Image 1 (cartoon, rainbow, N blue to C red):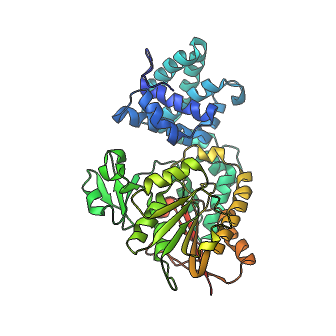
Image 2 (cartoon, rainbow, N blue to C red; image 1 turned 180 degrees about the vertical axis):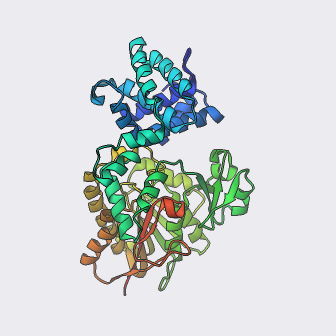
Image 3 (cartoon, rainbow, N blue to C red; image 1 turned 45 degrees about the vertical axis):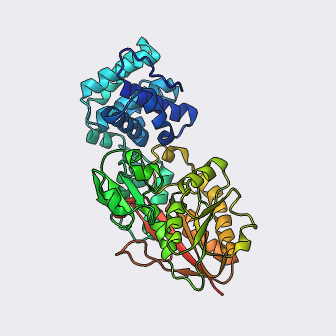
Amino acid sequence: MSSHVPVVPRVDRPRRAAYDLLHAVGADDAYANLTLPTILATYGLSGRDAAFTTELAFTTLRWRGFIDPVLERCVDRPLDRLDPQVHDLLRLGVAQILFMRVPIHAAVSESVQLTREVRGEGASKLVNAVLRKVGARSLDEWGVVIVDGVADESARLARRWSHPLWVVNALREALQDSGANADEIVELLAIDNESPGVTLVARPGLCEVDELLEVEGAQPGRWSPYAVRLDHGSPSDIPAVRRSRAGVQDEGSQLIAIALASAPLEGRDEHWLDLCAGPGGKAALLAAIASQRGASVTAVEPVPHRAELVRKVTRDLPVDVLEIDGRSDDIAAEGFDRVLVDAPCTGLGVLRRRPEARWRRQPSDVSALASLQRELLAAALRAVRPGGVVLYSTCSPHLAETDLVVEDVLKSVPNVTRVALCLVEGDEPSTGARLWPHRHGTDGMYAALLRRDR
């Protein structure tokens, strides 16, 4: 993408930028959060314009599962026969009409103009006709229409709250397993469609929380002693963040690192291991805590560009970054005191942050990832010394990625005890602790603490 600002004669740049992001995600399999900064820079957007582009694009991506059933009732052909670009343009228009504070006439006229620029006069007439039909009903009315005739409750929830059906069923099962009431699934699905706030972490020994609280719009975190919520402004404008003395890190992620660092330990406490370290947030917090105790951290990350991110964020901390596979037997010889396995997963607990992820993941991903997760946990238990502890975590609540992984591994690894832990004050200690976005205001996290017996 070129660095100059494109010539967009009549269409406002924020909407054109949102379209470009949506098109990149759909056509090029791009990641929205990674592509967004480049597109904003390309169009020279900042402040309100950048915020509008972000809200429009991310709202459209999140609510695609609601928007498309609406379009099915307003378009005179199957959606898979629509020009993909026109489909994206229609989605953007529906998002403005139903989910944003844009007057219907403005949403329609701007969408028509954008379509005229992107796909020509003929397509703009189709967009005009379809969006006028959409605007004839309210969001609540459309919510009733799109589930009419759908008998299965989970399928109704999937449409109303814009999630794939298999994700709804997986979240529902995990909630039930944790003792939730029946209404919580709606709360969880609803919050997945909200934009999460920005949370900072003050890395102890490098930055104090009080320094971050001096930033305009900053408030103390709810759970982590190192957390600060940022109500507005850009983290990149904060000197401590630019120098990696602080970082952007959800409280749930912070609490995972804190749980490992706080776990009771027998014997020495000198060598810690982060077995799945990229991109480095948990490794940095662990290393900051470890350095205050005279301990060091080994961070393992096999992907070179992710390993480089770990080096960058931990450059002022006692961290040794190894570019090797976490399942390698070479790691086991060290005999680590504390080991974190923040395993790759489906990310069903962080759908707020990754708006397109729910549409990319498939049920088949679960079994492949669960196999990797078991191998990594087994490797961690080989790497920890007798008397040491392993914390297994995922940012998914799916039972097949959480409790079932731990149970399967412990069947084949002797002399390991599950230790109950509590991630936040007020929750009951559990051998499979969970954080939920709708309960705790954090990313959805799972943690199991294991002690290697002597």
